[in-house]
Amino acid sequence: MFTRLKEDIASVKERDPAARSWLEVWLLYPGLRAVRMHRRANWCFRHRLFFAARWISQRAVRKTGIEIHPAAKIGRRFFIDHGAGVVIGETAEIGNDVTLYQGVTLGGTGKDAGKRHPTIGDRVMIGSGAKVLGPFTVGDGAKIAAGAVVLGAIPPDSTAVGVPAKVVRLGGVRVDDLDQVNMPDPVALELEALRRRIEELENSVDLFRN
Image 1 (cartoon, rainbow, N blue to C red):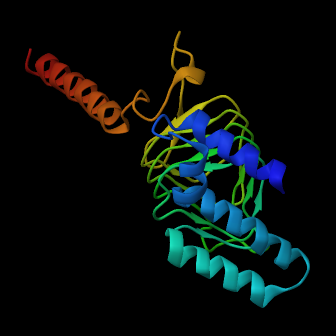
Image 2 (image 1 turned 135 degrees about the vertical axis):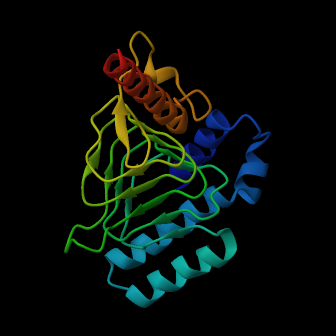
């Protein structure tokens, strides 16, 4: 358990430039606190102490604003940055070295039974406000842009943007180097598509007049 805690704190310091000390991260970071409480809740859930598991998870919600179902499976070095409004469903599975930002939902659509929530691979980054909904896989190394709504599988080492999310191919640009700020703006992409369509229609009108 102590090794896991050291890993979790180190991962926060590595990924958050605002983290100044181990003590600050341990005592004051709600994301780390939520993960620590989830590990206890998950232990209770696996040992069929269901009431205790739910009690711990609901206590975590009140203290951190982060809701993680006790049955969710979470890997090592999981980092929730800021964290307010994060929701992780019962059958969600999260790999190692995953980063989530505030307002992320790993949820279901209400149409599935059994496995209802997504499986997140290793080294995935999910931007603030993104919704990943359904029992599919987000591949290792994938990046989900802020505000995206993901309703289907995302391949490894790709970047998904928009509502609904689409995988964006960036010719010559390494997606590994992107972060929330440098990802393509889905609104800008849609506006550019509309601009091209207007130009096509104007050209068609000009040809008709001539």
